[in-house]
Length: 333
Image (cartoon, rainbow, N blue to C red; front, side):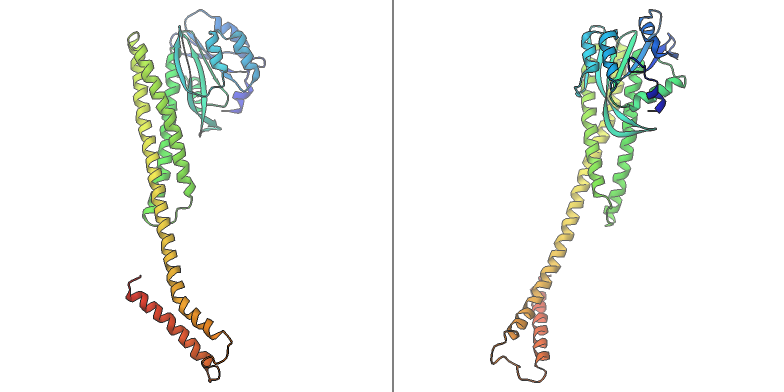
């Protein structure tokens, strides 16, 4: 989201932007002060109003002036983060996921996009900048045409699917690098990175699975009345299914990589414990010898013998070597 987008907010309503689309899909930006005229225009075409819910004035405008039903107003201003998609009378309304817009690039955090759609109006609302909406707005500014509100909403969902697909490719590349390091027995610098990929994949999978279910139910309801809309919903559902499969694969790959990494780390730990055990076993006999000669009691061997210390040291060394030889004979290692 550009800084200019935030600065454009209507001083009294919290509206972020308004576009009026003609019958051929061409769009013209409308001054925020003219929102009432745009929404009551009964001529051909339709109007897109985007709202920033972070501005409390926006909620007041929705309650007082939004040309939608009370149910739609409650959905637009609600706090429920569960995904929804429903048809109430002549209105299509719902809560959809999107990626958070971080400056010029999409982030990995998921945000909620609320919308209400009629033949003449599309109201969209969000608390935090949404990547797909910002991308569609740039496309509109560049001349892309949307003859109906449904076509624009379709483009938003389609763009979200594309953005998730690109994120999946990025996460897949991270797993590829980690897997290459693991197969070459090279240290993996950021083990937590694999866990982050797994967490992000499962988060997105949950959203896509819910979207697929909602589109499947909606398709069954509208296909008989509008075959074109049914085909569009089916196309989006198939695209989401393919991306969901990719996310599921990423999650499984990340889990297997973590399991294999844990296994290798356990093997290294066991090897180090084994070396430590062998050293302890070899050092124990010399320790007993030195302890015996260190009792400072009467009649200790070599107490009055020249080079007695070196003799005792030799016995201690021989005891250690004897222990090492015995362990080798027993094939302990």
